[in-house]
Picture (cartoon, rainbow, N blue to C red):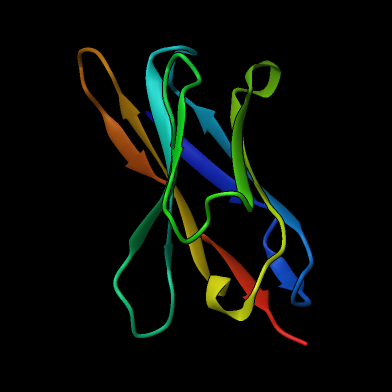
Length: 118
C-alpha cells in the first residue's frame, strides 16, 4: 500500500522560508515521480513542482527561482524548500507520487497548511 505523509507546514512571515517534506512508503526508490500541488481557499488545486526518477526538476512559473524540490533517498522522501514566501503562497500543499512502471500506482498525501502572514 502506497502512503505519503507531508510535514513542515506552518505560519511564516512574508519573505520567510519553510521546508516541506513528503515521506513515501510502499514504493521502490527510483520508480516514481513526486509532484507538489497546492490549493488556496476558493481556488482550484494547482501544480507547483515535480522531480522525476532521474531527479530532473520542473517548476510552475509562479514559484520558479524561489522553490527548490529535491530527493532525500536515505529517507525515501522529497523536500520542497520554499524561500521568499509571499501571501499568494498561502495554501494547503499536497504531494503526489506516480509510479513510472507497472502497476502504475499513484497516491496523494493528506496535505499540510502553509500560511504566509505578518
